[in-house]
Image (cartoon, rainbow, N blue to C red; front, side):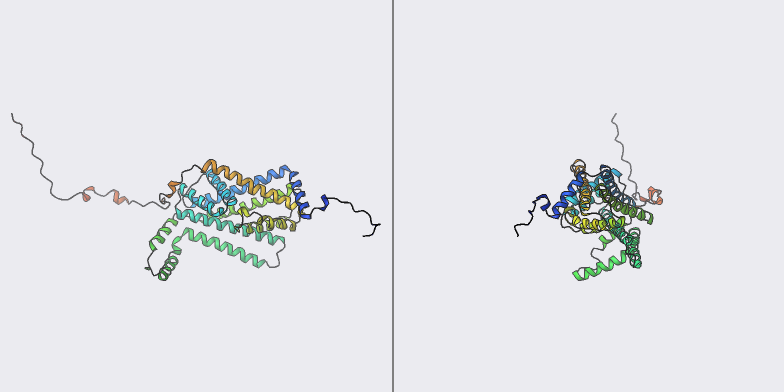
Length: 365
């Protein structure tokens, strides 16, 4: 370096790495966020949880199990806190919901069917949301692929509805599969057939028509739309905004990756996918980080805290031993024929000679 070079001014704050500077700006912008948009984001997160609980009520109602709205929402808040904050949370959450539904009057088969059907509706709703966002974002060169994908999802829903409304359709398939498995295991061909027929009889109590299926799917789609709105309001609270299509695609990608059980609540995985997606949708990097932090604080931490409060005050001391006493009857009760009630009682009386009356003792006068 030459002696006549100008002296260099040392500015330690500017010597920070770009990533550290962006995170510092993100925290400052979050502190200065618009409180009205924060409130809107909180309300959207609550609406998402409400829609989630409505899916459960609709499916259980089709099986003849009626649950109060507050009870259903309380169970979902508690299950969400178990699923998103504990290792192995999804398994604990499913077990908790299964026991709660048993307490409400559902059999094990009906409760398991509800959990599976709810998961299918959620997956289809998220896929439809992501495909719709991708279509409006610019994936219009091959619309037939989108139509075929949506057609496949609709066919899957109709197939699930048909099996739920008419379980006898899969009776023959189940018998053949069971016979094949028994032949491999060296067991009699009819081993386990009675248990299979018993499960189908319990499924006959489910009367999931197309109207109920459409209502449940609408609640599923509304659940995702409300969560996307929570993210969009978080972006506005951070002082920026993103395109609706780009926001939807970024959200769907982050949610899809978040289902991988690496960390509770998709920690670090959701953030790593969500921030680049928000930047791609038109937000600056500091605003995208701020929006991500606001969204995660509300939709994850705040909802999880509410769920743990509900769990400790509502479900912690609840006696769930009654749920293991046996499967309650959720199907139709046995029909008593009128001819059985009006039968002549003399026909079922004991037949034979009538014993003579006992002689009266004589009085000695």
